[in-house]
Figure 1 (tube, chains in turn red, orange):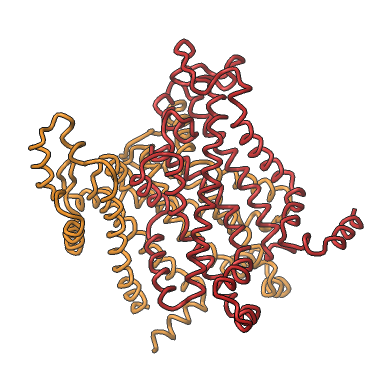
Figure 2 (cartoon, chains in turn blue, green; figure 1 turned 90 degrees about the vertical axis):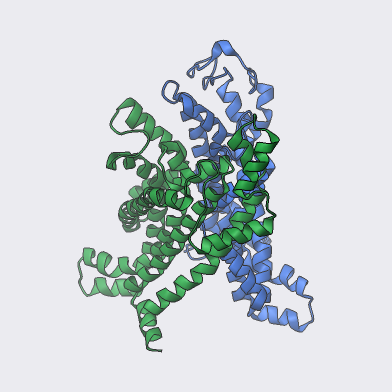
Length: 296
Length: 313
């Protein structure tokens, strides 16, 4: 087993070094919990797209005779206040929760990286101005900013993503700036400057790739909390709205029936929890693989 | 140190003012008309115009912004469009609820999180550690509003032990605090674990052990104080997170706090309410960050030394 690994390393000396993608993948594969999480998210995401074709009930068919049913063989997860099949709704809604988590983290990270890079690289007045703006962004909790922005934009899938993307960017920008500051004074950047590279090239080719790795860990962990935040926004009525079965908004409408039909409340929450847990497990594995402090 | 506190308090002012301008601008662009909500569909155009002029909503953006900032400098948050009550006074009566909730949540997460973290760090990679790691991860994956609903279901509806909403005594705060702090307990526990692990490996801990100190003394006197610094940073951040989290929790438990007030404010397009609420929360957050920085000095003698040398200058 060990020999095989050394062989592989010898054949591809570059790709399997610590920090590279194949290395991270091999570390994730070693952890059964992380793999379970990954498989769960992928499975539920794929099911979300094919469920309308394989399930007996559609997520939007209203069947007043079959209201408020508890889980049974005909309706595996029961039905809601309009007799819609919970399983079909949960699966159909999975893609919203998962993709909002992913895309909004991506948006935050990309915006944060751009802003942080500019602040870190140019320094001086630009840096000062950007940092003061970030101070304002971070002066109150992110979810309130997300609420305020989605109040401006109105409800909807893309609008939630924009709202959460903007409200989350400050953390990434700060981190990126700190990384850049430590890299800016390094010798290879000096070398690149000395052979007359353009500023854009130095930032894109030399600084960003080196500054980004701690951010990847941050992003991996961020997807989980973005998923939670997205469902909280929909729960409060600012995210994806009612007829769409986003899990948070399902919970929000099921809330009025908690006394008599608790299953409608329990089930979407369990799915949110399992999905976020999966993201956390995978993120944890990625962090262990990438964080040199933890690597023994 | 007082000089430092003063400086930090002064730095807070411009940030709060910009926060106010930012939130004012956001609210200016919120679609929907407070007048429509206030007067309903049956209002005549004349009534609408009259109400608009009375609330100053017919002025252009710049004039309204100027009025808002000037009022703010006199600590006047304006009047609610919907109820006509003074927003500043409403906020003061509601603020303690939010603050109690957030502070207790941070306290709970420290009181439970740190021992769990130490427990795990001392048994790193053994079975109890793995179990706790999984449990904490599960806890931080639970949406707080869902946990709140589940707690209500179990303790209020099924068992009838605790009230499910409103305020009126310590009983009313138990469920909200549990619901809001579980995720944070988990976060603090994990942070304590990793930071303890790092300290336990350092040389001075080995020295303390080799000079024959009891394990308890090594952990509590030598390792823990050094491991606390990153935990304090996290705890300060968690307070902000709690202030946000209380917004959701307050709405689940219908607690009359600032978060709940702001949510109704946003839904009713009641801009002064939202603006005032955000400023209160930003202020509480900034003060808490300042306290966090000061706590460092008590925990870390190196930072304390910096304050003292700064004072001499």
